[in-house]
Amino acid sequence: MSGIEQAFHEGGWGMWPTLIMGTLALALALRHAVAPRPSLLPLIIGVGLATLFSGFLGLTVGLIRTFGFLHQVEPARQLSIAFAGTSESMHNLALALVVGVLLALLTAVGSYRGAAAR
Image (cartoon, rainbow, N blue to C red; front, top):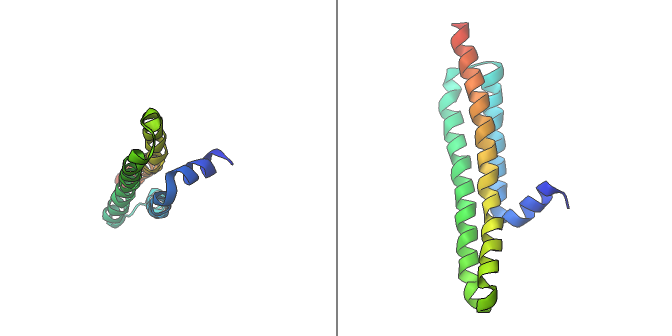
């Protein structure tokens, strides 16, 4: 399994809404970077925030599930299971943050180009 496939497997279902919203946000930001349109900015910001919130939601649900199952594991293994579950859940937030960095860069390029054209 490749690194990306592994991250999606470990991150669980929360990776999908983060990926879908992130792809939409990146497409909007790329459109803005190529041909700046200030009217796109509220949509880019809104979908970008939804992407970030989706990543946090995936992390939170993963942590809830991880800590909810700890009582079923013998005490000697609880700490290692908690660390593993937390690590897996963090993939959701990592994806959202990677998208957020790219989104910020593309939006900045579009806004700069738009201001320079005026």
